[in-house]
Length: 276
Length: 290
Image (cartoon, rainbow over all chains, first blue to last red; front, side, top):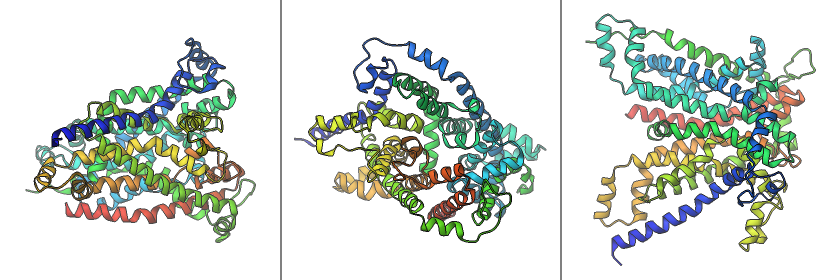
């Protein structure tokens, strides 16, 4: 057997193995999707059989009883505002951190970087938010997410702004522009793709998060989708078809975002891998 | 011609710094103090009680169990996520016809909430669930288990679910690393007569080091911070068999023993920080040498 032929056989073998392995990932997801269209008796075999008749009604029921719309809007509000605050504040901060190249800016970068590593101190964060007087509110959760994502965003923006030649700033400064107009007229247009990456990374992590709403949203009408699905799971533990429908609905927004924004996710990951 | 650095005013850092300090740094610093107090829900005032909380942590059976479980979970997931992530990345870096679809499939669980994954797996992991049925169907009936109710294995079950979810995420980072390696190295190696294993060992692995480093650190730190996986799948049970630091903090919060919970948090902070110092040093060294 020739070398190229052997290589082709090896590729086929790897491909077959990978397709088989992908079933391990796909099957549980398919069980959830098929189950969401079954009756509450049929669903109990938790199998890959297609539904005998497709119960689209399950989704309507979940929508009405699970209060999904409210949870969806809470999620949009929390993820949207915290992502915007995060993008505005960290891109501006990274701009100065990168351009200063001083001891202090180096120290501040490491100081921010610690936030990527250190675990948050949950119970005392509650205490601090109580001191500010807004414990239990959506506002507190927005600020907490903005601060938790600061480190990662500064890291991403730093890498990118470093690659923008400083000469661009210098020309503008010579023409009499101030720092703000340099930032808004030169840097901001160039970092649009990074903004998209940061927005999507923040959105994914905040949308799916369970911990912060659990500790900080004391009123269940403020809950986001993952937490309200947990509540629903407790209440409707006999109706697995409805639970599955609720799970599908909860995953749909991130799934759609993933379909349209894959490019930005990959560039976020690449920044981490290549920079090390 | 040099432009004065002072043109870049530190004012622009202030909003980010303020949010970060008020909602992250301040609670952490406050936590260091409260770890040494008898802070409780039902107490009017808070008093220092020295090392009492830490003494409790290291003498209480359940809390020790939680520490051990956290370390076991971290080690198992670091190995599993990186091993599978690397194998998937190397395989899906080959010229396969379905590789784009396969990459998307393997990555997809990491975009789902652990809440969704935990609930989907719960019925499958029961004694009469799909996973045991599958083992029986392929003649491995002896491997069937009460995956979430056997205290001896429950933490490993949770670790495997976590590997299932995020091996694809690690794969994506490894793929980005693999794609940054120039093909010329491999061509040169082939001309020199090196086989696939030799190429992998002497070209791929060394050049993949930044990706390996970032992945190991991400999975290690993430593993030590584990909470949601356990919360959703078992809530720390059966009994306290799968408690981890994260769930103990929630329990302490619920019970009102806030000083103890904060001490547990501080302990986690110290462990994570000590482990991460090599990473910080590595990154600094790399930036200096650039």
